[in-house]
Length: 202
Image (tube, rainbow, N blue to C red):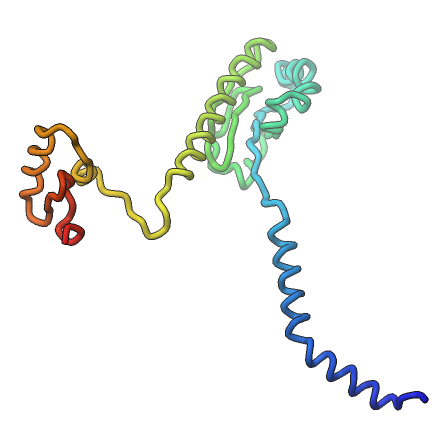
């Protein structure tokens, strides 16, 4: 016996109403997972080439370096971007110092320049100076990563340089005595050879 359409509709409504919160929560979880799985955009470094029409040395660079540069490690690290010195500087490069000599090459990343090559007298000259610029950029990136890992936890403030020495433990009795003299200053106390603010020493 067939059920009336009204009964079927009521049954479906009750089913959806009962499980709607669970379905909504599952949808939110899936959306959050999709967003978190999406790779974060990474801004690559760029090698800016300043050029102009009729530049003989620009044409020589294009013939000797241009075809192979994108295939090199340097080319993958810092793709080439051309800028005509007689045209308006691109909006995102307005901060970059303009150039009058061509060809010239500037290695940049996130608003900072890591070196510039002015002129092109040959392949060896170009690759040697570019290697120095790339090494400077890599060192800066490594220093930034190290500084990021050494940051204090949220809500935790490192001691100031003027107070950092007062929180050290010394085994040498003479150093302990010197620290105890420092601890005579208002607001500090010595416990087991360690100088602490009096609020922590209580």
